[in-house]
Structure formats: C-alpha cells, structure tokens
Length: 322
Image (cartoon, rainbow, N blue to C red; front, side, top):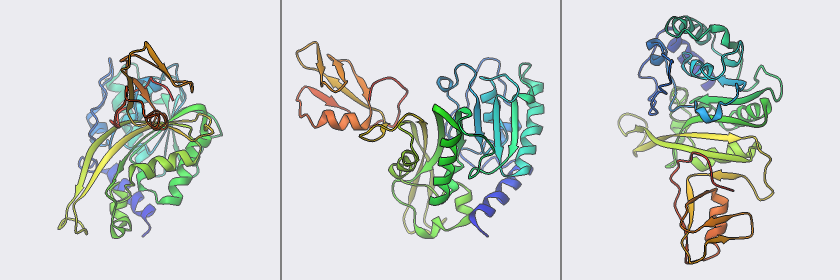
C-alpha cells in the first residue's frame, strides 16, 4: 500500500469514528466572541497547530483550506468571511467531507451567525487543486503537507502558490524534526500518514516553501509535539518532533533571496540618536527592531560593538523590516 493510500484509509476511518488521540494540537483553540465550536468538531481536530490568525483575515478574504478534518478551522475561517462560498474546503476523502457537512449542522445550532453555505466543500487533491489561478487571498493547511514525500510536497506547495493572489498568504502548520528521521521510519506508510515520519528539519521545510517562489516567510510558532522512543518505534535513538506554524507570503522574490523571519531582533545602543546602515534599515537608539535572518546576518557582519543581534525565538508576530 502506498503512503497516499494509507493516508486516505486512516482519515476515512477518522471521519467515520472521531479519533481524539490521532493528533496532538498544542495550540489553544481560538476563543472568539460569539463563536461556539461543537464538541465533535474539537474531537476531530486532526492538526498539530493552528492556521487561523485574525491579522491574516481582514476585509472578508477569500479563503482556501486543504484537508478539512472535522471542519473546525473552516468554521473559524467562516467567522471572518460570512459570505456564501467565502471559504473553500478541499479534501480527497469523501467521508471527511461528509463529516464536515454533518458537523456544520451542529455548528448552525450553536452559532446563530453561521450558515453551512458559507463553506464550499469540494472533493479534490492537494496536488491538483480544483481552483483557478490567483483566486484566493489566504490558503491554509494543517498537518497535511508533512505527509508528502519530497516531489509531492513540491507539487502541493506549487499548487497553493498558483491559486493565491499576489501578496496572498499561505498559512501552514506541520511537524518538524531537526534531529533527522531514520530512513526506515520515513518509509513506514502508516507513520507518515500519522504526520510523524515525514517530518523535515526546519531549514529544509523553509527551503521547500521558498523554492516555489514565496518571497517572505514568517515563522510564527515552534512548539514540542511528539517523541518517538526506542522500544516503541523502530529507532535506536530518541527522536524529538516539534510543530511549527508558518506564514508564507506571495511577495516578489528579492534579488538577494527570500526574507525569512524567525524572531531575530536588532538593537542599537550607541551614543547617537539612531543608526542607519544606508541599506534601508534605521535603528533608533535602544529600540528593538524585528529583522529577517538575511538582514540580521548583514548587520552582524558590520562588527559594530554597539549593535546587538538576538538569536531566533521562532516566534514572529509582524512588524520590523527586511
């Protein structure tokens, strides 16, 4: 059985019978005024983080969510676009689409503002999305792309890039593993379907995103996720897996490469009112400025004793410069 077949079988069963322990989401569920999430939706929250961030969702954006799960994030996205078909949900598993439809009926009972028609559910493949070019403002996936092997991951990312409008946002949450994943686990179809053994090192994950053309990438969160222990899995060493939340923006690619924000900050603490590197970066005295990794490296290379560059926090929430 191929890993894609194993994935469809796993999530068909998870649609028919909610599997609360299937994933371990470490991000708290958004508590928004007037939003009630049915218990069954929460039980079918098969992700490793969250892709819903209010600052991505201004002005009724057209939203695409791939891999619908039990519909929880579709409901959350609908909170920000209450128009018929304002949110599109795509899934390859018919049973999962039906589970979402059923859950939307529960959501209508608990939320007087919500209507199932706000969500356009479509059966489709992440590798060949059933959407026209440049038609959505925000695209998202949660713990789906981690399943794909390298060539399929490239196709899935390229498809998201294709359907996004210029400056549109791709919001992702996936497991990562900087310690490396043993080959025998990578080839285990069930472990890959469980969003475990497909975990890439963070840098390889970011490279895959920028290689399809995203000019700006924000690493918004990085949290512990799972441990694969000897005796429980086919490994001789303890494997630590984290989850990461990333926003990739369809900005033009800068000539000197993508702007990747991992939570680094520059602080000028010299005697002058400000420091100007004459490359577009002005740092006010003792005022932290968020900078992308590329700018952080360029500033550090100046060797200024009154300029501090902090390490990556892997938490970036906007602002700063590139």
